[in-house]
Image (tube, rainbow, N blue to C red):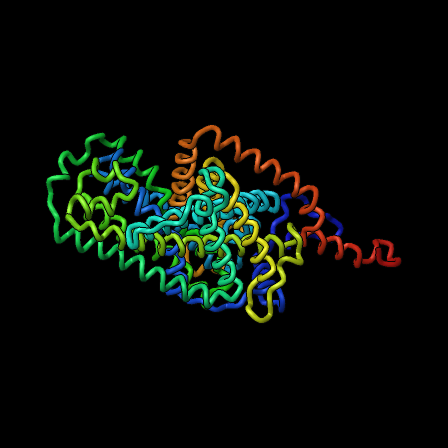
Length: 488
């Protein structure tokens, strides 16, 4: 701990990396080490490939035309700088909590609380919103495959004209049950879903290239460089999710090797699939045909290749894709919440690990119920915008964390090192800030309000109950007074 006897740590107290790692081996507070590189990489792919590629390609093509291909590459490069920083910190500090834990070890408790509080909202709202989207895609699949659909009363939230969203509640509670059972089971199910959705995308790519033509590639850049960068800003959010891999640091069997492979590998795999999908789609359909549809890939197969029955396959792929995203993002949220509880910034009793399953079962169930209620009843159309700013804020702090740890702990073991530091982390910060400035003002206002609420909770509860502060005070109480009298 960053404490000294006789001195109460301030709000910028820093957790010592060795104490963080040691804590994970203590009975009752450490998570089960049960996943390897393949499962971790699948988690990254599971979190990244969701509705993004099935929907956002149409939006990007509308802005950049055929040059949307370059936009996919540019967005991947923007993410890559932050991915490298995540890989270094995840391999060096294999502890649950991701950006929250890394910030606690570099920038101090108050900054860690802010990013942790930010990530709780980001992941929670994201899961609820994705669950709502899952229900919509389930209905689309049932309609395209069987000609039936659930009634609006139980398939939509009050915001959209229904009573409550039953499919959203179902998927959140089902994922909650799976996460309680154990990380091994969760990783195995996610791996199966990743194989299914990659197979669906591969089906699309093969069909598209068999029917490929070059007519839709002219003009290639109808809106110039500005169109490419604007589309990249939209597409960037189809890549978000690789950071969720780092929340599984503590449960990795060989974190020093597996985490860098999983974080960088998942980003590379998704980039390859995204670019091939974009090229294939433009080979069979024009940007106008795709941008005019809510399901651009299905529209490309229908209008470009004349395969109308493929809409059902694409709809199934979307349902499976979204299911794996819900699983991985919700897993990430439980691990961040768990780390904050274990540090005492939130109630420590919630950080108890179930001895049978090796998971924070009580915490997972509580979060699952809250998210299910959120998905069923609460309007999400506005607050979901906070997901973007929260992710970018985390990227900024993780990149800064790499630079700081290189200076404050130069001798710390680093199984993976970001090349050309601090240049690449600084570029990662600049990319994130650039994208943050493009977000609307009302998103910034909501973000600040949420952080103000978090600061109030921190000083009312977290500051007084922080493990760092309690251990320092306990050390002071046990220390002999200067005059050699009785301990205080």
